[in-house]
Length: 143
Image (cartoon, rainbow, N blue to C red; front, side, top):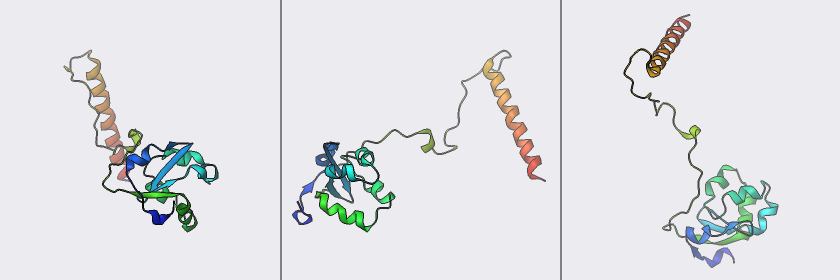
């Protein structure tokens, strides 16, 4: 199939081609069957298999592929992606590193502030540590 054939596919059409024996990817709203290229991909087949059946535009662009790689895509072209179809994207859940700093403040359980209560002691220790750090930073930055 060549670029002039203009077959229209949905994200769902591509999503079923997601394994080493049948591997398609979407790059810049075009579908490519890269199954035969898996063994020859300079970055290894696992790179392509991670985005098999998905929109790999972001990964393709961030890898810095040059004009030679872009020209090679024509050889694997399957069709155009209908922009109105819903993308099917399997993504890993967000990690601790992806959470913005200082957006979540850890909360200790409610306490009665009675002596002997572990939560009260923890709050006191945290308070005095924070106070000591604040004083220490204040003294250090004034030098």
